[in-house]
Every structure is written in C-alpha cells, then in structure tokens.
Length: 366
Image (tube, rainbow, N blue to C red; front, side, top):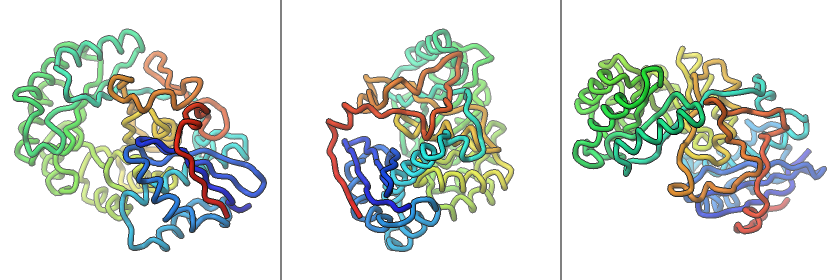
C-alpha cells in the first residue's frame, strides 16, 4: 500500500504531519518543535518527494532512502522533518492494526512514573522550590529536575550565586525521598563541572545533565569519571555513529536520546539498542508537552533498558503558550506521580481540530 498524500499543519513552534495511503487510511505525526515553519519547508522539499508513491510499511528503508537521496544534508533539520513522517507512519500502523504503538514495539499500555522537569532559569530558588512542593502535594510527583548555570554559558551563572543557592534551597525544601536532578545545558568546562558536581553530591542531587559542551564529549567524560553521581547526556545527538562512539567510550552514565531530534521512533529505537548493548540506561529527553512526550511514553514503556521515569515538563501557558490546546482529552494527566498510556490505537491522542484549522496548511501528493 503506497503513500499518496502528505499534509502538514504548521505554526512557528509546531508542525503536525498527516500521512494518507491508497486505501484512505491515515495517521498523524509531528516534526520536532522550534522553528517548525522552517522544518516544514524542508519536509515538503527534501522528504515528501522521495516517499510519495512508496510502500509505507518499511519505515527503516524509507528513512534510509531519504538519507541516500539527500546525502549532502546529513544534519538536524532533515531529521527534524523526517520525524514528522516516521511518527505519522507509526500512528497509521497502530490504527490499521488497532493497537497502541507501545504494543507494536514490544511493550504494553499502562502507567509511567514521571519526573517534573523545570525549563526555567529566570526563576529564583525559593519560587522553584515552592512550585515543586505544590506539584508533590497536588499530583504526587516525587522527582524533579531544575536548571543550573546558564545555557551554553561558558561557566557563567544565570546570575551571580544562583546555582549554589538553588541547589541548597531545593535540597533543604524537599523531602529526602524526592529524587533531585539538575541540567547544566553545556555550561561548564571540566574543572568547573567537577567543582559544581561536588556541591551536587553534598546536596543529594543524583543526576547531573550535560555538564560540559555536548559537542566536546571528551570533557564530559572527565566529569563522569570524577564524580560519584550520574552524569547524563545525549539529547542533542542524532547520528548513530556518534551514539556508538559515546557508548563505547562511556561518556556518560545515563543516555538521553530525543525521539524527534533523532528523526522519529524508528531511529530512537536503534539508539536505545546501542545503549542497551553497552549496558547503560536510557532515559529519553522530552522537554515540552507536544507529541514528543506522547511518543516518548510509548518508547520508554517498550525498551528493556528504560530509566525509572519519564521527563515531564512542568511549564504551562505563561512559559510555553504554544503547547496549549494541541490535543483533546488531556493525554498528560498526572495521577499520583504517573501518566498513563491507554490501549487506544496509534499514539492514542486526538489533535485539536481548531488548532489544525488555524494553522498553515500545505499538501504534497503522488
């Protein structure tokens, strides 16, 4: 059965993809967020022409064919676009077989523990601690990650003294049973990261994400080898050659592929297998409440080397207004610290028709 139509529904941050095959069956996916309007152009120019008219069922071969035809463009944008096709095809397959995607890849529906992931650096330590406590009380979330340093900050703090203050404040404010994690977003050199790491160790932080520039893995390796807590990373990496190298060299303790940055579920599963074969845990990156979190729920529930929790953004309309009203029937409801994958076919979500109507529409046909 051949792919005969690819439709996109796009706003600046989000672009949904609808794939339709010859018999009229269809599925929805999503390209990676941020500058999705640019990614959408790449989708119709560098992805759609190579897959229209092709049989839909071999997702891996379709991706390989696109890469072969576009071998001069091996970077992130092509993969962000390809994620839209791949996730739409998985949704299609699930609907055809009347199964949730998780069941197609060896898992089963059910509940997943979440950790509340803060995206804010412009928040003061007291306010961050207060909102963690409220989420603990209201939703039973008992693991949290917060931001330290400044993003790609060359060793600078967001403001002087913030990192030390927030680390100590969070440790002092939350119960010992609450798991505490930090993300440095490539802020430090190895010496700085090790010094910060000692502060983290002294304050019951168990997870130190992306301490050094991610494009300098040899720096991260130094930190990993020096600290007793888990050093984590990998969200930015989308080339399987890099994944093999990072795992072989044991750059971090826990690896964090992003389904959308990787080019879709098909490639993310390959990364997870590389990580598993190396004997490591996979705790995927998922930093907003778009389809990436839905896809990651299915992904995490199926892989053998899954970490203990799903990254779950705690940001709302004040910070991420663009992620509001994407779906009907709230797929992100948290109950006693868990979200649930239902047995509905495909990704199990319904995209808000009003959102689609108000987006920019484009179609490529066979």
